Length: 371
Figure 1: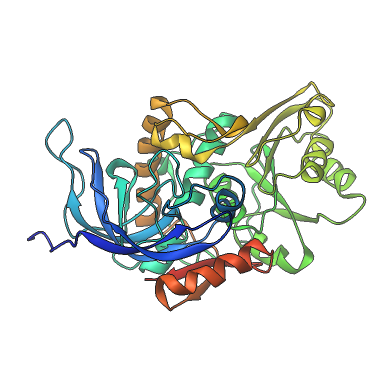
Figure 2: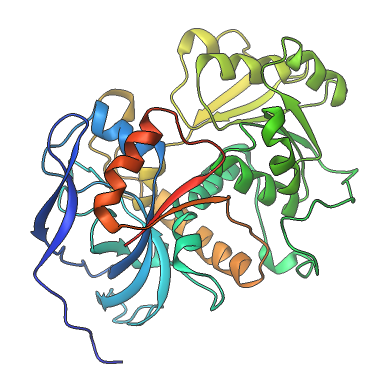
């Protein structure tokens, strides 16, 4: 396939101050030898998008992480070739609003992404669905690694004849219990599915209105997180045997819930946000971890305080292996996306959508904007 004509200047959403984004002309990023340049067709929103803008603003930096689109140019790695080719439809992500690389973010017409962290799309998958997945599936990968779990697509049974969203009557009776706090969030529904595929028994906290969604994605039991007795209910259901808790919300209150639900022998807790030290010392029999997804790029995360990370090549290697596993899961139709909140209107429409997410007005949907 001939290489498409690529402009030098594109439109992108950049930080114009603490909080707001503005649509500006910027240079199309150069792709490094290990990267692919992707023409974006859809992008998705994550809470980290507005948190980086509000709390760690880099004025002029292109924002956004999740994307799906078409490869239009390839770098040439050390071996002189790539597993991708021009014209491939892929999902991927980048570290948007990045003080270390401000000229590259997903909220733009062209994005440079690490080629080996791209996942090629099955023919039947549309760009909007694909854009909803990248940060979620790689976050689940880090969660699995933190807890000592693994996933082997080659050993999985064939895909079910029914839709992946159809609740199954089969309840696994073996395998460890794993609590997913926030099981009906976008990351939570992906986590539940992969836990079931890996042979665990996932249970979830969520609201009563989203319990059906959590169960359809693999939860064998759900618990109302607002119940004053929720920790006792989980302990009773698991017969005090819960050892693993995944916190997709990451507040002091949800951390306390997870710690309280873990059985008397202790276990492991992993969150998507930094946890207060004063809480971690309440139970010294619980090991605690928190996931910062940007380390998967293998480069220094030039953020302030506890969010700073040195370069971690081992995280990059892990991410490349996980990307190959996710490509196989999608090919086998064994991973279902979170329900979408789909918006047209291109990049300008994204500004209002991000503000809705910032204000907590988005529930039960993964916001996706077609470009």
